[in-house]
Image 1 (cartoon, rainbow over the protein chains, first blue to last red):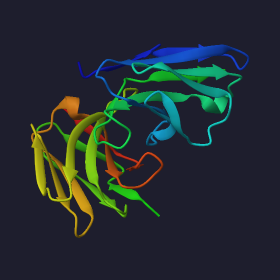
Image 2 (cartoon, each protein chain N blue to C red; image 1 turned 30 degrees about the horizontal axis):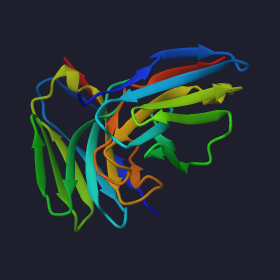
Image 3 (tube, helix red, strand yellow; image 1 turned 180 degrees about the horizontal axis):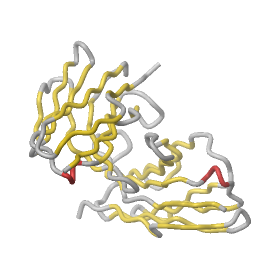
Image 4 (cartoon, rainbow over the protein chains, first blue to last red; image 1 turned 120 degrees about the vertical axis):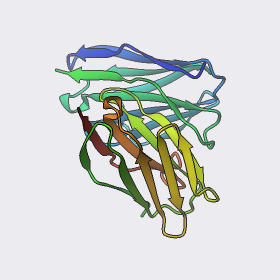
Length: 113
Length: 112
């Protein structure tokens, strides 16, 4: 199984809503990542979890709150988002944080009204 | 500053034709270079990974080359198919917070 799954595929939310994005992998990877991607731009790193601990936070606003409940799951909690936060949110995983291949999920298309 | 530059930004070719995408990088120290294919609204999928000592690597109709001296890579697509329409992103490990520096991608459109 070389798949990273993400739910939901699409999410529309208002600026006062609270929602969560979910990511799951069963490849035994110990590093998981959240990226944000705007149209026609490359992915931008948001967070890195290594062995279920947050190792990198790329100065992301506090309205984005990551959580790694166990080695297979990664959540991104959303609260009080702005319309400019609308983007494709990608989850990825790799064996460990410094190794080569990152496997990406299909992404969640987020629209903030 | 670590940078990855890709060209062209966009490319339109007819089905069945070949094409070559370019990637120049200034990432240091260099560890490896990978090409990803990303369909619109989907996550990137790895095509090839090349280390310093590798010059050429193939994956079906995709062939990547690497010249570590000139810091250039190319991705050659042979006998293009409609399903090749996508963005192709060059990513170099060696810089950035997660060790990765992303190019902006080449948007490829295959026309019937």
